[in-house]
Amino acid sequence: MSVAVIILAAGMGSRMKSDKPKVLHQIAGAPMLVHAMRTAEGISAEKTVIVTGHGAQDVEDVATAYNDTAKFAHQSAQEGTSHAVQQAAIALQNFSGDVIVLYGDTPFVQPETLQSMLDKKREGHGVVVLGFHAADPARYGRLVTSDNGLLEAIVEYKDATKEQRKIDFCNSGVVCVDAKLLFSLLGDVTNDNASAEYYLTDIVGLARSRGLTCAAIACAEAETMGVNSRADLAVAEVAFQTRARNLAMDNGTTLIAAETVWLAYDTIIGRDVIIEPNVVFGPDVTIENNATIRAFSHLEGCHVSQDAIVGPYARLRPGAELANGAKVGNFVEIKAAQIGEGAKVNHLSYIGDTNVGSEANIGAGTITCNYDGVFKHKTEIGKRAFIGSNTMLIAPVSVGDDAMTASGSVVTADVPDGALALGRARQENKPGFALRLMNKLRAAKAAANKD
Ligand code: UD1
Ligand code: MG
Image (cartoon, rainbow, N blue to C red; front, side, top):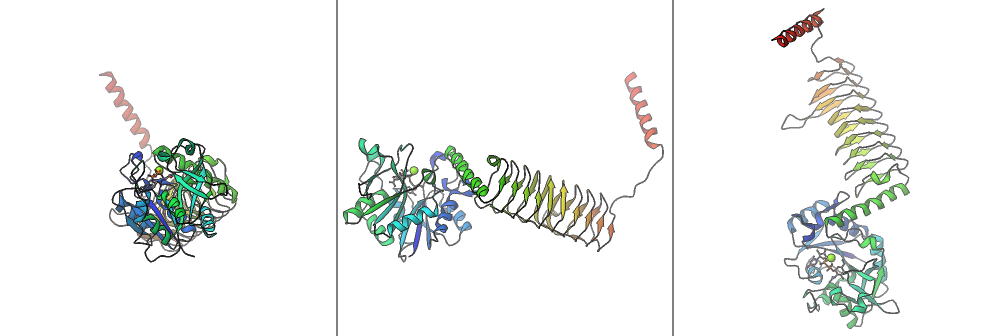
């Protein structure tokens, strides 16, 4: 049985006070819209249609960058949730199967929850709605259920009676309906209500008037958390982080101060990894078993293999690839570089666009000078090479296996295997010169003070 997902993302989100469409604000390093798209992936949706309006081009660009099979439908005026879903009709005209409607600003609905909705629907109901018991039902739509557990109606807060407002079972907005039935029901929705909007929620009453049953299933309120303001965004971020940290610990990662570690939506961490306090993960990071990430490190777009040690105060940028047992120490930045097995870059270095061989040792203060102002160039460092402290490697350049560079060298030419490169001025000692110079300067100062 096929499933399609429609994600409503046309709203402006005026309470965000932003020039950016609301659904593009990020949680754990990914736009809220991407969280919703991942939920759709989680149920193997055959088609995902995103309804755009405000900032449509930006929204479409972000969605396409994440998944170029996403389809779009444009809603030029926001006339309500039913009207929004109707815009997806053309994109789904050849689709037959179940449709699930999600909101782009409700990023935490879990695929398992959608699967339970699909299961419920396949028991023979016309429409299945996802509800939750709200601690504070506020202005949510209320789900009116009968004694036998069926859903009788969804009543918007504005249109609800005093009695109905006492109901704490609220509409999350997520619905599941057969595609053909959905678009047929939407054709009958009117805007005869307190907001003069076309309500998607009306499809429940309409389905029942056609003799179909409707049902509601409940999920935890945390899953349906919506974001309307910057304050909501901060609350959502903490909710995501709490869940992700707990999941990491459940899977065998030690987080010494869990509340200070910030994970991304896609961070993958292996068993017996130790993460010290105040580590920040950007997107696309994988950490293998037994690695240690020491305090105050920042990692994004990188891969850390088994037994490697990173930090404290290290920065791994996109394309950093650490092999087993590699060590990257304090105040070291690695970008687009492979650090071979057991190799060490322990202090105060920049290694970019570089291949470092296994067991090589990169001395303190080494810089790969990879950028000439226009082009980036590559550095090759061989196995067991020893790069002396404060070496400047002017790329493109290579240092061979078992080769050395003398401290303070500026290396502009390739160094053969096993060779020592000296690229600095030869030292000259002038006996007694320092003493004579200092005496002369002190005498000059004494003379100046007399005047
Ligand atoms: C909706 C539900 C309400 C539910 C609540 C849960 C309706 C009529 N009401 O109310 O029962 O409790 O969500 O949060 O469905 N959107 C569009 N185009 C439109 C209108 C909305 O894309 O024309 C998008 C919005 O950007 C938003 C979502 O649909 O992501 C929900 O719209 P919103 O206006 O927030 O609906 P609520 O009034 O909160
Ligand atoms: Mg809303």
